[in-house]
Structures are given as structure tokens and as C-alpha cells.
Image 1: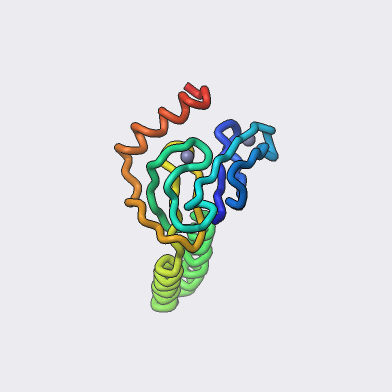
Image 2: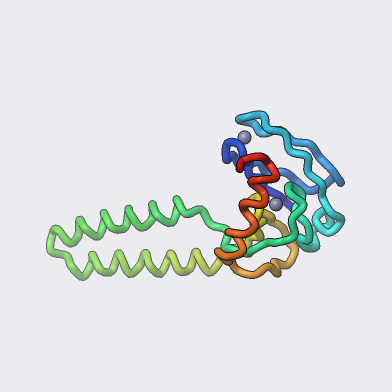
Length: 154
Ligand SMILES: [Zn+2]
Ligand SMILES: [Zn+2]
């Protein structure tokens, strides 16, 4: 299983493989140290039962996609279709937009699931079954400050 630790100091993403019971890593940018403790289930790529960063047990599920890619595809398509529209090719312009909407949909439905820790935002990728519930703002509002206090951000 691959775990992406989010550095609470500078926001960097730190990918690590869950192979050992415990592992110390340092943030590549700000040198913040993290002591990670992986549970047996994490190392066996079975399920996410305990967060190796903050020891929390509350997770949510989301689609694994890069928002920047999605946005740039839409921007490019809008520019192309604006070009066709300008030259009076209305139908082509709408066709381009419709085609991109379909591509977006196809890409989205093929995205893999990703499990995320409510408290420290660590991300979990692997072959295990993602059983967490979708994101809940109320839960995040309660759990995020807990972690921030723990690491001395509040
Ligand atoms: Zn950092
Ligand atoms: Zn966590």
C-alpha cells in the first residue's frame, strides 16, 4: 500500500510505501520529521484501519484525480470551440464542447478510489477495498482541529 503523508508544516506531499512496522521520514522541503507506525492490515494492503501518521481511525473516500488536469482540458476545449464559434461554425463549436464533456465523464468513471484520513489528510492507495464513507464536512470540522492541536498548529 502506498501512503501519501501531507506535511502539516509546509503542505508537501510525501509518498511512502507501507513495508516496515515503523518508519521515520523527513519532509524534503521543511525537514519536519514524521514517525509513522503501520498496522498489519496496512502493510498487508488489506484495509485502512489506523492512520500511520496521526493514529486516527476516521477516513473518507474520494476519486483519485488531479483537479488541475480536468480544468485545463475544459479551458482548452472552451478556447477551441470559441474559435469555431467566431467563424460562424456554431454546430462544430457545440460539438467540441459536447465531446469534451463525454471525455470528462469517461475519465471520471474510470478513476480509482482513494482513502483519505480526516485528521491529517494522509492518502492511501492500494489494492485493498475502499470501505470508508464519502467526505462529511461535519466530521472534518470536528477531527481536523484535533490533529492541528496535536501537532501544535492551534
Ligand atoms: Zn514540510
Ligand atoms: Zn491521519
